[in-house]
Structure formats: structure tokens, C-alpha cells
Length: 129
Length: 230
Image (cartoon, rainbow over all chains, first blue to last red; front, top):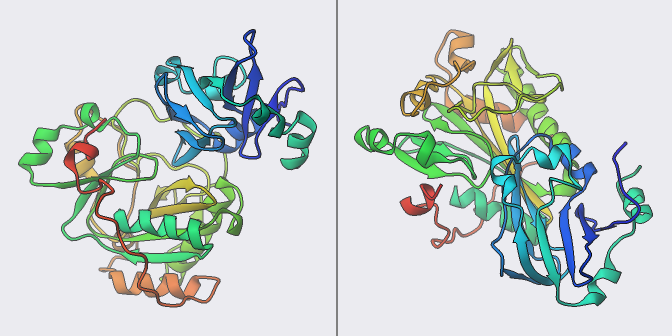
């Protein structure tokens, strides 16, 4: 069964949002369920710091063995940092999706967007677990 | 590639599903969406050999498209479900089609996948779960991309020849390709037309001819800088 931490927020498209010490900045990645469905991740294409995204705009792509999928920005905002370590170690997304496998840090443009995300119970229900 | 990509957009916009069967003229080498082609393959050697190259919108490794039937399925994600379910469902149809031709085609069992090394392994080198095999050798190589509410899965059904050219233009030696072809298995030449007819006969839903969507010229597939950007 996939790990779905209770203290995170989620999208129906399998991204998670984690709060940081700075209330305006969140960490975005894909869920344990998503990495399990994708299989071995071989490449993650992420935006550069400063890139601006609207809510649910595509912010990157992820390639697992044979398949490429889009990554959706859970909330509108500006990229503060992308996880450069994934370039050399994309498998971190499989090993530790909520830790070393994080993808972008995002300065949230509209705090109201955070309220539109799913909580762990709703996400768990959506993935049928 | 531009047509397959346009079919994906059309499936996303309209909710319709498409099956396309085609071949390449001239033959062509295709790279996977994120493949580091510039470091993995010898661009000068490819130019010397006069090979056409293109970068696919889908994942995976290099494929030499010469003696093959290329298939593309673009449809809403909801049609087949998860990535793996989609992979298996389409391959099950292709395997059924190949069995109509008289080969014992089956799907590889799901098992631990082998993470591709950094070496120049061709698409056909390593079978993974759900792929179409004859014995333990691949005869179909496929890849997928998901965009919006739709997916595109396309791939090569090998009629004849080999993937040795991929190894030839690689900068470092790769794994030995474990592929076979329909002609090798049946001991006679197998044509595009008979394989296409078998696929259409084995397809589960009724098929209606369509002109397909308009291909945008601005998509970059014909641009060498885009093809070699990585």
C-alpha cells in the first residue's frame, strides 16, 4: 500500500505539496503511489528558478521506463529552486518521493490555491486504497 | 512523429480514439524524448551514413525504423486505465494479431524491471513486463506519453532486418539486441499489408477510416537542433 503522509496536501494528478519553514514557499513532488505506478524513473525534466506557473499548468515531464508523463503545478507560483540532484539520480523519486525525490520549491502566488488541494484521506480514497 | 503528436492532441481535445498504422520513407533512426543523444550516439557517423533522425515525443531508447509496421494508438486515458494496463491491453491486441499470422506471440510476465544503464542500449535489447515476445525475444518495441486527458502509445513491429545499426552508431558498445522479426520466425517474407490487416482484424472496437488531424509545421520534429538538443 502506498505511503500517503497525513501532513501533506495532494492533487488528483498525484503531485504532493509540503509546507516549509517559510509559509510562502512549498515543496512539490509526486506521490509514492505515482512513483509506484510509473516504475523506474529514468529522467525528470524540471523548470529553472524564476519560472512562473499558473495552477495546474504543466511544469515539467517525468520519464519512467518507456513512458513520459506531465507534471502539474499544484498551485500558482514562482519556482524558487529545482532539485538539481535528480539530473544525476532520478531514481531518488522512486526511493524517497517525499524526501530526496522532491522536484521544485515554489513561492505560492495565491494562498487560496492551497485550500483547493486534497487532504490525505481524500487522495487515498481517490487512488482506491 | 508530428502526426502521432497531433493525434495525441486530437484525442485530448475531442475524446476520440485513434489507431494509425504506417511505415517510414526513408528509413529513420528515432531517439527517445529525453535520451542524451548527443553524448550517446555518433552524430558524424550518422551523417556519413546519410541516416535520417528524429526525436520521438515518447520515452525509451533509440529505434531503427526500416522493415517494420509502426503502430500508434492515441486515446483518452480512461479507455485502458493505468500506464501498465494500457501497455498490456494494446500489446495483447498486437499479440493476438501476430498469432493470426501463425507465430506464437505472448506477453512478457510482469516482473522486476531492469533499470536501463547509461550505455547505448537499443530499445529492443531488454524485454520488460507486458511486452510482446516470441519465445524470449522482442518483436514489438513500444513507448508511451501522457498529455492532459490522453495518451499516445506507438511502437515498431519488426518485419525483417535488425537493430544492429543502433549499436553501430553508438559511442560505446551496448548490450546485444535480443530481438527477432516476423520474417525470421515464419521463414518467409512478411509484408506490411498482411500485418496491418491482422491488426485491424484483431482490434476489439470497430475501426472507421479517418483523415486524421492537421499536422502543425512548428512542432520541431523536422528541426535538427531540436532533435540533437540533448
